[in-house]
Image 1 (tube, rainbow over the protein chains, first blue to last red):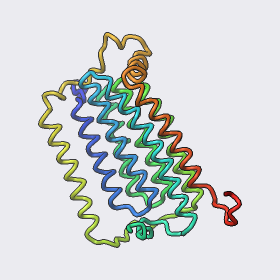
Image 2 (image 1 turned 135 degrees about the horizontal axis):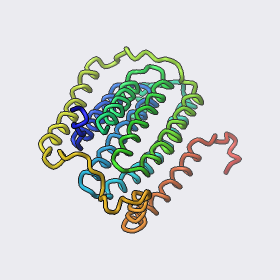
Image 3 (image 1 turned 90 degrees about the horizontal axis):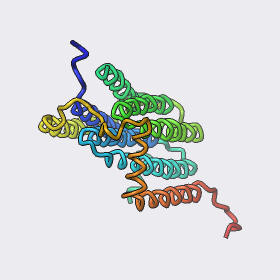
Image 4 (image 1 turned 90 degrees about the vertical axis):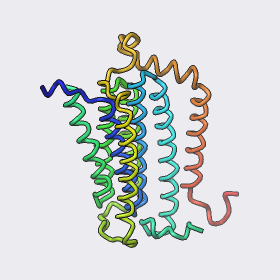
Length: 105
Length: 179
């Protein structure tokens, strides 16, 4: 009986939406810039899961191609972002986003 | 069997995500992120995206999280911060409302199109997926065929990111001898 239930694409899409919501909540709530970056990675992974699910549901490989490019851009984004964080932390000891409010112009 | 895999992977994904936003120590948050990334990789495998699952483990869990841990150790911020401090009191309820609203909108869209998505996960075109390397074959044909220009642009992007990061992280010479 239990094996008769098959997870459909909707299940994966809803899970990806919940994961995106958790990531968005973390970006808005956490103060540590490193943890905010991790939450951005959560959101990117939620979108990747959506792309792969729809690629399977629509039998179109282009969804997986997009995920490939998203991964490349995410890697570059993390490298640049962590470089900025290291450059800022070297000059001051504040580790929260509140201490960087001088950047607001 | 698919149900079992989905339940286990979903527990990994959601447990790791909750851990990322609730653990007060950044090192624990990074390790929770690894759990989430492995869960996503399991789901990629169940969607016949074997290449992306391998890349997910190698690039995300292998490179990006290690980079995070390097930076945490380098900056010495691997101490517990108090997550109960709320400088702006309205922020947490507001963030909860906004993120729950986004999730609700997406779930409503998924539910309203469930006759399109309600079929069990069948995989990609089975006639071309008989060979063990069919996924990589399909992906390569698409990337190096129709998307070859975007592929070349990503190599330029990676080069720019590497050069820019080296430039940012370099210590500036104070006596101007570097000019």
